[in-house]
Image (cartoon, rainbow, N blue to C red; front, side, top):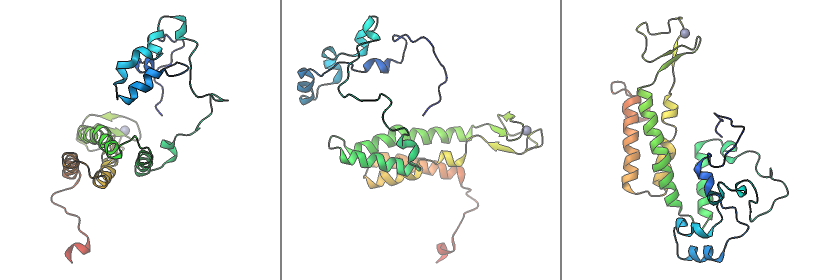
Length: 219
Ligand SMILES: [Zn+2]
């Protein structure tokens, strides 16, 4: 889903992302592999028996003879559009992932929730909260950027200025984090971290002097 930043015409397997060197390209898995799974061995411990791209670097085999275990009639077969695009809201995406986690016996759903929140949602929210208060402003008409709001309160071309980081994007993951955090009964530490982030957001976006009330608040 990311746009390419650099295009290379000549690929040297030694120079590509090291992550791709971990792909196993054997035609079958040896018995040692299955034995190791029963002992919960660390993948690194059985690297020696697996045919990985990393071991082929520098030889002619780095380009050819890649094995696979499941054949296909068309290499381009598969979903043409990722579920990340077809599912609209963040809530839909998260629920779809958790539904899948629930179906797979080997996956601990609560652990998935905990990881998504601590590794993805919380850092994103904390990062956006910081960039919101140190953001620059942009003119919608002439495109000029300002590190600080000019004293005249608008762009020098006369047009209004707009924010580059919006409240909506800062709060994007807050509701979903709170909801799944409660639903899956996450540990108090993580739940409290979410609560602290929420407090920080309220402190930034809501005025202490003007409190919005509904009629029902008085009854
Ligand atoms: Zn302008």
